[in-house]
Length: 383
Image (cartoon, rainbow, N blue to C red; front, top):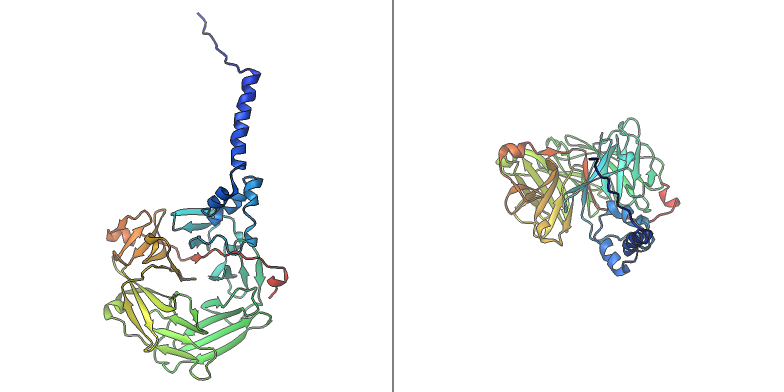
């Protein structure tokens, strides 16, 4: 007996009804109230913003281009950008423990010196061609090349390159000697100056952390936790070194040191060598110019990397009193809690096993960034 083949067919009326159902379903997305769309938009991470705008006309209507929304979105958390020799550039969002792939080819095979005011300060591998890049609009500001006979360990800048008072400053520190190069917006040549500290006997070797600008002066750390301050406006003692008498146990096991400004304070963050890679935080006592240990950051959160470090006031309880490093346990990001004195993954698992801590992957070519969006004209992009 042959098998019967049963064919199910739909009448034209049934097909028409199915089409209307699908169309109504599609139209339901287009006809959402603007108040609801605005609420949804306020929860969209900036990497997904272009996708939101591309959904349909009504969604695009409530989401103007990023460059026209300089204060949007206010809730965005800092994210970690992984760059360097990587072909694919990635953003890691610590709030949601999600990694986004993005197309910013300009960051590939470049040196990232720092990030601030929504701009990267970047350079060629030879260290002489330097330029600014807005990673969200791809706008660039080219600045005059660094002289071929000059190299800098660290380079940072004072304000947005579209601002008339922007200045780029480079540092080269060897023992007690400081060589500084700077160039202001509108200038065509770098100015190079050299300074000697009165404490030339102190072997000051700059740490991996970038110097920070505070009240017109530049503060930096050496690998032993000593403090250096460059005072551009000072006639005498423009370059000062302040020896620090940190606990011997810390000095003997110091692996990394970082400096960061936080709510008017200058903090130093020290990472120990050893199995637990313990973290200590100190605050600068300006009256004595010495570091004092603190145990609690309150609602503050520190984001630490070699190129850029900063502090935010957490509006979400679980984010406060933590230090975020460019470290990962597999695909999960890692932070250090000053409450538990331990490393945690973003799933809130505690890294207790010394071997597990030792095997944490740390990215050297990584920069914490705060999304900022601004509009500017072609003239603004001329140095």
